[in-house]
Image (cartoon, rainbow, N blue to C red; front, side):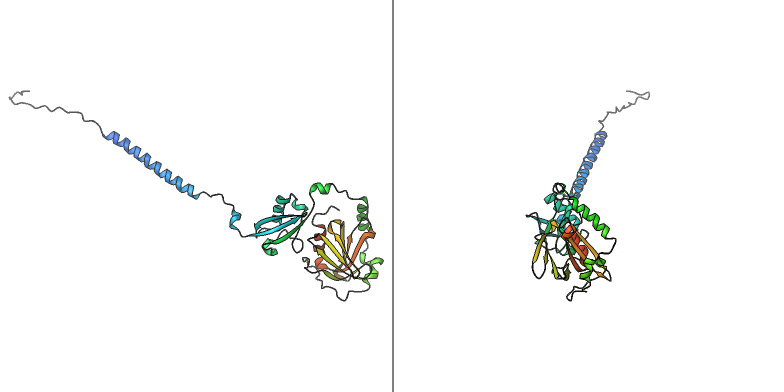
Amino acid sequence: MATQDGSEEVIMETVDQPKVAEPLVEDAEKSDEGSTSHTDAGNATTQDSSISNGDDADDQQEKVDVKIIWNKNKYDLKIPVDSTGATLKERIHSLTGLPPAMQKVMYKGLLPEDKTLREIKITNGAKIMVVGSTINDVLAVNTPKEVVQQEVKADENKKEPLCRQKQHRKVLDKGKPDDIMTAIKGAKERLPTVPLSGMFNKSGGKVRLTFKLEQDQLWIGTKERTEKVPMGSIKNVLSEPIEGHDDYHMMAFQLGPTEASQYWVYWVPAQFVDAIKDTILGKWQYF
């Protein structure tokens, strides 16, 4: 185009260029998303690696293999050595169906519930005896009326100390046996591994008590003979400190429904009284 002075004016036309920046932004966002996805995946992998594989904590504990014997049946059991006697009873319940409250668990005497197997010194291969009846067995047993009457009569007799009664006085007046076992007043000990000896029976003869836990029997031995009494047949165990000798007791095993069926033993060391009762009757008593 010509101008007024005759020169030509050059007109530049602007050509629109395609916008490329916006797709680059979208690509960047996609890239960021992809990067975030990889990061999340990495975090997921890290989290997954920290998840427990579900192994039981007991697998990390020291265990002991024992054999449970109940009602002529034998059960193999592996249990942490730091488990308590109460925990062992729960495991026995799962094996036998025998409720813990109805179990007498014995290992060198009645097994304490509050101590660990390590403290009781239970080792691999130990045989643990269990005595007890299921609830159905107990409900099937009716307590004879004579037993109830005898218990009432025994309570009446307690008004006067047993050691003052004539039938017992004639034995106690003989004095202590010459081979009497040492007694510890106020102490509680588990049954010794040897028989309890150095005691008198009602006739004044020497008597010894042997607790055969494997057979669930109490052996009452005298010079003449040995009576093997099933512990389950003993209805009750009575005891009373001897006046003037409180570290020794007189004790009766109720072998039948009447007073005449009580077997009396004199000069029983006080520290074994509770262990004898628990071993024979258990901590659950229905008579």
